[in-house]
Length: 182
Image (cartoon, rainbow, N blue to C red):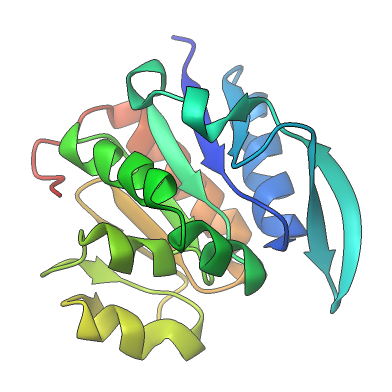
């Protein structure tokens, strides 16, 4: 069954953390839309420098969670910090939890989950430098390659992408997770 996945990102996303999940989702025969704050392109970050530009498929103010089966949140230091400043982005993220749909976040990507107020009692991982933010938001943080908690998939860094991609697809195939919560 064809699935539609939203990848929420803006300038400064870690390139591999968007490109790898997007390619893996498309290998499943699914659609993976890059949703961003503005139309045009967004610029990736790679190895401490600006990298390639990626086309935005859907502008956030025109995106609707109901059109998607799941959400992916790539990391990068800049990307999640810019997104969490935008209430529309935070609301978009929260809406996936309210609809009990799978959400996958890697590296710094889970930072926006703090602002969406969806971490209380959830098991997660992330890049080590944001672990205290996640713990302060009520999450149970662990240093693991991939952590799955009722439809929420998290990983630490680009080295974890193979495990992250596999678990992300497993959770999306399972569909609605009744215990996913906002």
